[in-house]
Length: 313
DNA sequence: ATAGAGACCTGTGTGC
DNA sequence: TGCACACAGGTCTCTA
Image (tube, rainbow, N blue to C red; front, side):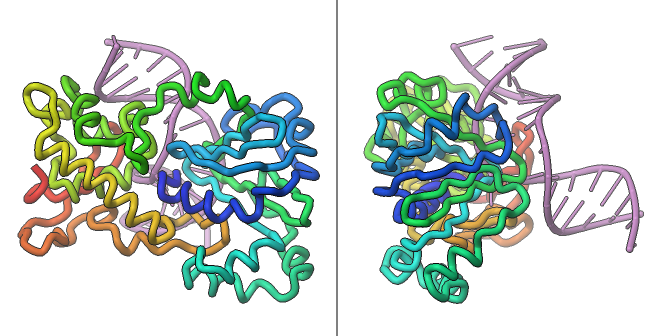
């Protein structure tokens, strides 16, 4: 999926088109995504205003005016397309990087023409939200691993999708002490532990590889050896937290990454992929200036891991 | 309780 | 050009 930085980028792109606007119509183009959509999905959305658009781990949560939350997960290949009069104003501001602006200016002529020109349904467009300002937000997902559901605000904390989620790495929930405590005694590999959403929520295959490279820790290391013997945070736990926070912050700042089937909510392509140190760089030299090693690929629990055996221990 | 394999889907790139 | 196969950002479910 889009991992946490991509979901955060999508959130920022969607917010101006959704927040403060009323949903006037919903096109549900199939009964299910990964799971069946809720009973009366369309009826339970139409007429509600979007009060806020938040993110928890890789989930987007739209707060609706009736107290429900529209929960959206992008799976592996989900994306949103925005056609909105609000978009031109957003693009003109400072919130969207120059590359995104360039991608959009060409598509926009007059507000009416913009909306009309982009109104066609494309393959794998599954849900279209129509707003009271004439804007549209379309969810597209070829692989259909993504999903949407409705959860009442006061049930979010205890809902099966959210109750077991671990530390949110973009907040002060993630500390070396807490991470050390969570990894203490774990017999699994560090790669697998960081992909476990119950420990740190929001990391995926790419950013785990990148965070471990930054922390100079091997993906094959036993997770329980990150804390000190008494379970407290030492040098390794501190480096790991710094690696996680650093790579996520850099990726969010760059506007998220874009691989082959991922496009930002605002339609622009990402560019953080150029900054990956190890992911997808098998056989290239390790980018750490003083390191003589090279990037190697291995498979752990069925997924590619990229790392430098020379400097990651 | 927990770790690993398999499953869910479609698209794309590679090699023969 | 066509075809088979590997692989892709996630995570739920089943099995050991």
